[in-house]
Every structure is written in structure tokens, then in C-alpha cells.
Image (cartoon, rainbow, N blue to C red; front, side, top):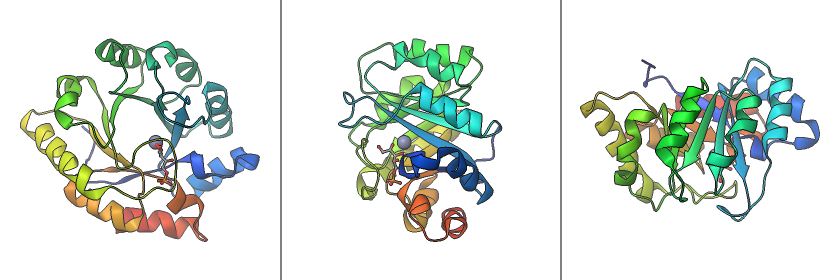
Length: 222
Ligand code: DX5
Ligand code: ZN
């Protein structure tokens, strides 16, 4: 059982300098990042296109030992799993909102030997995720509307869901990380941690900081 009191910091490479991708990955781990968060966007589920499995494979080659946390913001995640599995990611999170067989897709992710995550948008109630909570290793509660980095943390819409997920986990004897993603810096991380989150995705506050190590410390200790 993971220690949910220990914070895991997952810098999002969306905000990194891709002209030196390998160096950015290494710099992030050296500065104290725990996981690397990979935001895959298809221009359908969200209004932006980012990168796909080939990019993720380059990340894997540059940091063979890193825990790669993959966030699929795509319309048909069930059709695109294999490329990410082949890139040897450690977690794949799929969104609840599109129409496909969520339970079967979570099962396939786990059967491939990696962790399965389920992501919900700010407007999606936690109740919709409840049927799947015993199939996941991570619940990703979006704290912005997905699609872009650099947006503001949506505290009032999302923190009640973090608290409720934390309570459900205890009352049902389940074991999944609670991850927050979007607008996370030292201040919002502290708020989310107080509500029960233990994995913190941060793009802008890490990669645009003058001192990345200090930004990571702020996320961990705020
Ligand atoms: C938003 C992505 C996030 C994003 C976070 O659609 O899922 O992971 O990169 O970026 P910041 O930390 O800048 O809000
Ligand atoms: Zn993300």
C-alpha cells in the first residue's frame, strides 16, 4: 500500500523546453522531481494537440529509470494504448468523459503490467467515477479544464471532490493515489494536500521558475 501522506511531485513536460527534451527530463529529475507527467492531447477531446507515443518514447530513452505518468486527453484511449505501453510508461490515465468501454480499458492497462489511472474534468461529478475505483491505481482530479498549461487552479469546483475521494478510499478500503493537475504551485498544492491529494502535477510553476529545485521544494513542503 503506497504511503498517501508522502507527496509525489510530477512535473508536466508540456511546459518544458522541447528543443532540449532529454536535458530537460534529466534536469527535472536531478532537481528533485519524482515522476514525469506526459500530457497527450488529440485536438478532439481537448482543443489542443500536444504529442503522442513517439515523443513519449524519446522521453523514455533519455530517462530510462524515470516513472512516466501518462495522461491521455484523447477521444479514443482504448485504440491508442499500445504505443504508450511499448514506450514503457509506468502509468496510463484515461478520461471518464468520452464514450468507450472504460472498465475494459482499465483492465487492459493493468494486464499490460502498468498502473491504471482514471481522470475526471472539473465539471464531472465524482459519483461517475465510483464504479471504477476498485480498478485503478490513481484518480486524477483535474483542477483546470484540460487542454492548456498556465491556467488558474479551480479550488471551489474541485477540492470537495478530492476530499470526498479521500473519504471513499478509506471507507471502502481501496488504494489509489489522488492526483491533482492544473494550476498547481506551492500555494494550491498546500490546499490540495489539506483536502487529501498526494500527487501533484505542475508544469508552469516548475519549468518557468528561475530555480527549479526551489519550486519543487515549495510543492513538496508547502
Ligand atoms: C492541462 C494538463 C496539465 C498541464 C498543467 O491540460 O493536463 O498537466 O500541463 O500545466 P500547469 O501546471 O501550467 O497548469
Ligand atoms: Zn496532465
